[in-house]
Length: 197
Length: 197
DNA sequence: CAAAATAAATTGACCGGTCAGTATAAAATG
DNA sequence: CATTTTATACTGACCGGTCAATTTATTTTG
Image (cartoon, rainbow over all chains, first blue to last red; front, side, top):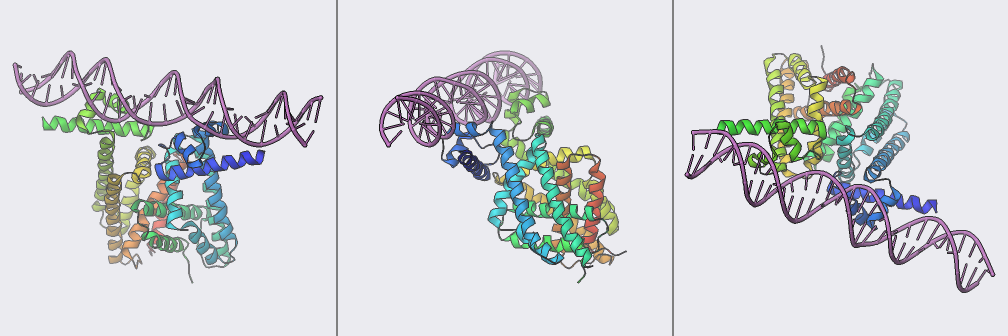
């Protein structure tokens, strides 16, 4: 009962994600969401307060999922380099998935200024990302292979580098460059960490 | 005559920029642009093909202007460190100006996927940014204070770091953090350049 | 257990409002 | 007065949200 409702909610969120991926966040209509979900137009407003509510929940859902996957990948590794590699490999997962996520994510970011809920959700996402960075840095310091004086600042830098790289890659819209940007990003982070073999 | 027309065009572009800063790109109406420019709605359609045309020209105009100012600041300096500092100081010019530019810029970026003209304009902007990066790197190599094996890749990394930093700063929406992110960005770039005193 | 009653879920037509673009009128220019 | 420029009114398309009607699922009752 409540389970089926939850299923419907997820179905609509997925449809909204798909629609936003293809049409762009702002221009997605309730009709399009309904079409992608294979339901009629009224359903969305039955399960969600309004269009904005759909997207708020979508934003929360995808950022949480992304973080959980990143954290799980990093957590599996024991060494600092292993963790960093796992992180970068998870972040740069594939051209297709990165395109889907970052297109919608960029749309959300461009809306943060108009929407405090978005801002809060993104803030939480950042904090999660930074915590992954800290985990890697601490491990590297323990192994004495990184030279970092401000852990917090370095964790922030790592995420700047990741987002900056993926956004720049996305804008160039060339799947072939995906590997190049992953490598560039990875090597730059190693330098930021002042990695010594 | 043609001069006055050019003046009107600029007036409308400025109004569109102001309107986009305050209301967001997608939701700006032709009426609002006209209001900000203190003209009637018909004028915008007289000087521009359509709304999209206004924004394409706006995007081109602001990215060119940003680049020119950055290039001028860097060009004034002789030393690698001087150039890099000038670059970062120009990029992180002030919370107010960064907010205005990056908000609109983010809007544009989120539209690049739907608009080949935007993509092209942004590509040109990136190439200009990378050329500034290269100028700094070459100077540092000459002075033998940087250790860079791939100039192109490093120039790309520098811009990733800058955009990543300013976007993250913008999302946190705290003017106080502006200095912090400037410093963080500057120091990270120094590490990417493997700067040795 | 079957029929009836009730509740939950779904549909799609419809409404109010907005906006881009157009047409046309008016004013300025020279 | 003819051409260019600006102002205003209008149109048609579109969209978010509502809601009455219908279908489907669940519960009650005899």
